[in-house]
Amino acid sequence: MRVFSKLFLSLAVGAMFVSAGIQTSDAKVLLRANSQWSETHSGSQVDKWWADEIKKRTNGEVEIKLFFGGALGKAQENLPLLQQGAIDIAMMSPGYFPAQLPFHAAPNSIPMAMSKVEQATELMERLMVEVEAFDAEAKENGVKTLFFHHLNAYQLVCKEQIKGVADMKGKKMRTWGKALPQAVEAVGATPVTMFLPELYEGVSRGTVDCIPFSVDLMMNYKMYEVAKHIHNITIWQGPTNATWISLKSWDKLTPEQQKTMQEVSLEAMRKDRDVTIEAGKKAIGELKAKGVQFHDFPAAEQAKWAEMNPDFFGDFIKEMTAKGRGDDATKTIKIWREVTQ
Image (cartoon, rainbow, N blue to C red; front, side):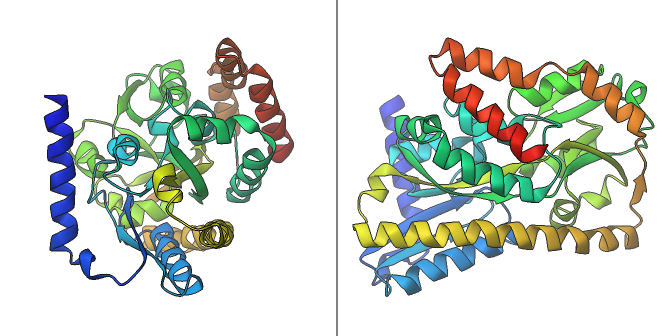
């Protein structure tokens, strides 16, 4: 049954490529990329620039065909799709794969541990160079990390106003990964695992009362229609979906093409940082015009929530130590603290 499922998946994805007319490309290497984001997201515009630049700088020898909104597979399916060869590239969040990608997932998941978009850029650029475990675990999963996207602060977005920690008791809140559910449970709320395409309906139907979300994504996914209250507490901030390529597809490229892709990827990451910040500034005014209310979440209440959380950094080091990578975990947290202090 498993073999049949994989065969069916490959045939189905292949049919999509034929129907899209991709087989007519003149490129020597054609790479299929599945993005979990909608095409309207600011990061998706950077992805288009990235693909265009790679094609241009390789004189048309490498072409990347982008599929948005999980057209080639759901967000939680991206890693196995890469490993099976059904896709070549994925813009996927490592936080959806904490067991397979624990080092990459940590910055994408640990709540209340970063405060600025720029910190995500500096952190990931350092970690990818200075901590061996990041490259090692990517290779173990048959993939290579090219660059990370950014998000504006994921603030507390709810159907009703929340005035403090006590108001979170009994609320249902969207989560992902391993750490965020623990932060939600710490204040007496109920974590609900939910992926991006499910958020609008989930809030609308009351499956969740609150979601951590950024102001620009509120606009992209029209969440302002079902949730009118944003609170100035950063539930999570950090790097979001990374752009990954399967090692099999990477090995199809010449050394010169690989170098070009890495150079463009570094430029794309910094470009993504800048457009993300600008998108956030623009979205605030647009949300206010649509009747969204911005509320103060008192500093004392923010501190109270942080104190109630587990020791996420300490737990990460303990978990990685048990897997024989304690030194790399300790180094990761040291760099993290240097970037955010």
